[in-house]
Image 1: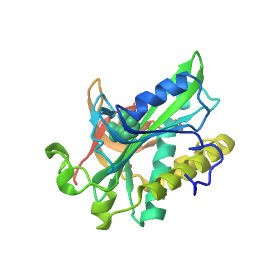
Image 2 (image 1 turned 60 degrees about the vertical axis):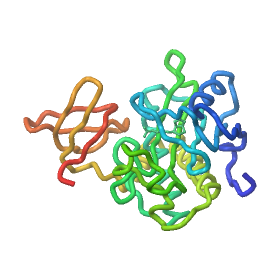
Image 3 (image 1 turned 120 degrees about the horizontal axis):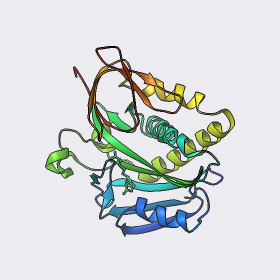
Length: 255
Ligand code: BTN
């Protein structure tokens, strides 16, 4: 906290050793009108939430489990762009603090050597046609050892320590993520999504590849041809039809 160079982000902190979910707590605080930039962070989550109603493994001391509340004066349709904005902030924090080279799998998985190190969950509280709060949840495996992951995550998850071969300080990564988030939040509010989209595309692995997208309503196969200005994924299927995907699990073919 003392080395944190931000104006708003993380300047109000709600910290708990153990919590059910920082995301759930952040929703309550946002509803009660907490200041913008409030950070909810815990050493452990007993029921961490992932995307698409999955759970998120959040054991004590071994990761960064946090949620940040933003209040941009924007229409709700622009909220998905904040997932991509947060992904860029996380990637750059891992580059600068840890010397790692992570990649982004649309919309929000951060991978190192093909394995997931961080997940991002962006949620929204909106009133009529205005965003009330955007809640950005970030879960990063930092000091977990490979054998700490449950069986079903063994092949798909990694941690910063596994990739670096040594234990890493969580606080320096947290500070850098908050600083980057604030930087890109301001850039976004001044210049729009364009510059963020460019940065994001520089880290993205799914674009230009043959993918399978599993959505709640069905599966679409085709080539990921890019993202729209809203951050929506465009897929061209074999008949040349373009699909716009708002939320899905992506499998990249031919890995
Ligand atoms: C994903 O499914 O990839 C998103 C995972 C998001 C996990 C984080 S950990 C902090 C915050 N609190 C939660 O309950 N979930 C998010």
